[in-house]
Image 1 (cartoon, rainbow, N blue to C red):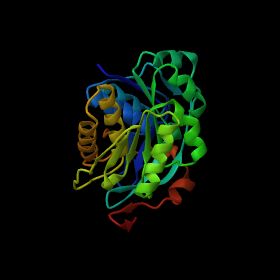
Image 2: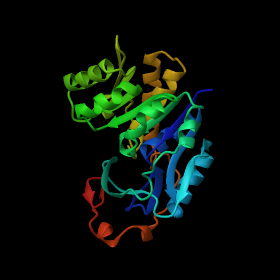
Image 3: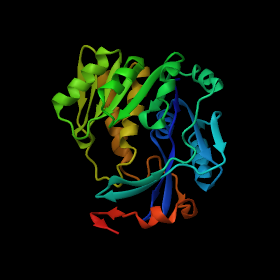
Image 4: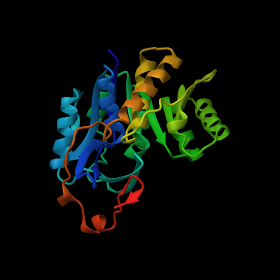
Length: 288
């Protein structure tokens, strides 16, 4: 049994045009996808004692994700207002709520029971990356953060370093991957949306095209790809097979609303009037 924990960000993604909110966030998404792929999964994070927190907790429980180390705190669960242009998600506004937290020694000890731990750069947990990597293999999502100093700080601790390749050409992506491998990362995954993905080791690279579907919502596709890649590496699957399975799984995520599904009516009361007045929703190319 592959055992993977994810520690860090969570959010409810609020689709104003639909009046619905969905659980999300890089680390929460990875924990759910790992469970769906057949792994044993846990999520370490913090949510509020509100309806949004109730939604996240219920979704994780229904997906068989261990929530032993999930905190419920006074204050607001993190949320993000989401727009869409032709199914591609657009991030409009956000509030981190209580999602930023300080891991305890008990959290770190809990992680030692897993083969790998996933953390995302948006989780604010960089100061604990070294401690986490001493407990388990580290998967880290750099997303679109590309400053070299940050890569050199985090890269040496990574079993799997993931990078969003949006807007970069082949030479730029290869240079970033080479830098991460040279400083100690064992594997580097570069996702490129409709342009597919590349998985690098220190000796060879593997690539796959995207699986083209008619997308409903692309939110969570990259997280799906990361989760399936990490899952496959720990199962010692052939790298080319891993990429094929990951591409299929990411395409499937694009066929429904929300990163992991699960939905309830938006908790409008938790959003400030200033945010609501300042938000534009783009649906199918039209601003609403």
